Length: 277
Ligand code: SPD
Image (cartoon, rainbow, N blue to C red; front, side, top):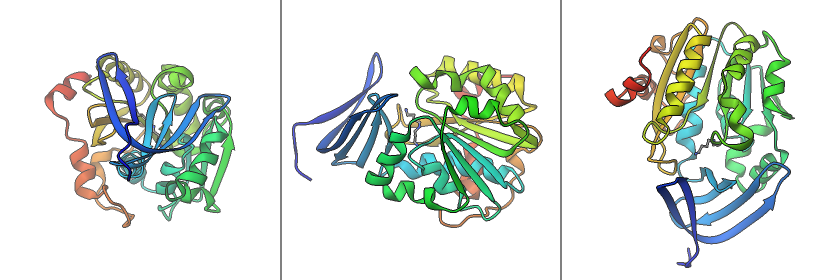
């Protein structure tokens, strides 16, 4: 990789940035919803950026996609109908279709340009989008959820950060619609940002999910290119508990396994304090 003087810098908050040296700009476009950029970086391979925020990189994408997908999918004993809200790059869908029980996986992504860019520049991430069980819908995920009561076993919310179009995906009203869109023993999980820099958001989101679902669990994973590297996911479940998982049903994972499933539920004290019930 050439040592250019070009750097991509994500302003993670007013006082924190992450910088990656860029070998080459691969693609840039302004979609109807956001600025979309793809860079080749020296350290993390290809990097997908939406509105200046890191979405995924070749090198660490597997951690996020496996953890947002497999912890909830294993918590459900027989996930057949799965909805992914957002996640237009296809990384979550790739993990969902690894589950033999899945009969139908809907991707509800608002921005078709993300799907197209991923197919072209991140084919290994988008690979699951060609699975015959997958139905890609270019729609507003919030409306899609509202219009599909009692339909899904598992819903996975792979949103961008809670600014702009993604704000509604972090609201109590949305969690209530998700509850209604799930079957009687359904469950959902969403990416819920970093416990180091998004503490107020995590407190509020956990509280809202906890008011909506009988069971709420926050779990963690290590994602180097996301702010601080410590990332949270929150699960809301009607009946099933992630602690009850006894076996793993997929084998081709690079991060997720049974030990990681249970370890991810063990929270450091400062994170426990954020989610005191
Ligand atoms: N700060 C990064 C949050 C991004 C979450 N979504 C990433 C999309 C990858 N499929």
